[in-house]
Length: 186
Image (cartoon, rainbow, N blue to C red):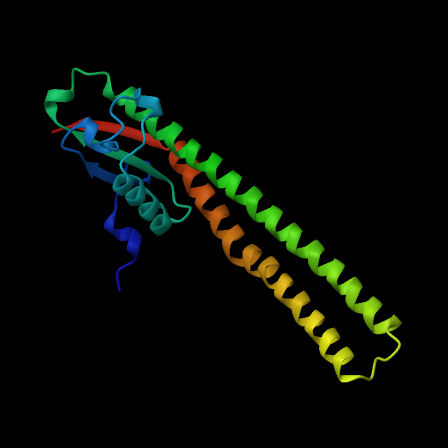
């Protein structure tokens, strides 16, 4: 079976080439965002997803982004603008990811401390209720234990799944924002 990254060509320095061909410079950007200056423009979602997918395939291997533009756009100052806009767009995505991470940490801490507080209540109820052998007392304390587990589950799931996934996305965004970008014309 062919390895995924074998579908990419390499530079003389051994970097993988993520190659894309655009019908115009403007096709790299979201079509509703043409009024913004180049560094502030959002990239086309399909183009950004394509870059993410390529880096997911390449892992930590070095790469360069190759963008082919029509010959008629050679006279424009597009190469510098494209480099700057790709850099700022993926830095912006990292800022959003950092906000999501802070939100996740806030939810983890809230659930953790609520679970601890509820556990203290459970211990208090079990220790100081005079009639611990009654059915109501047993159901109540078991219900509190279940509530503690319900509060603790998001602590584990948020950390194990969402927090780690955002970390992976941030690494990819950072690699793209620092990527070498070559512009050629067809």
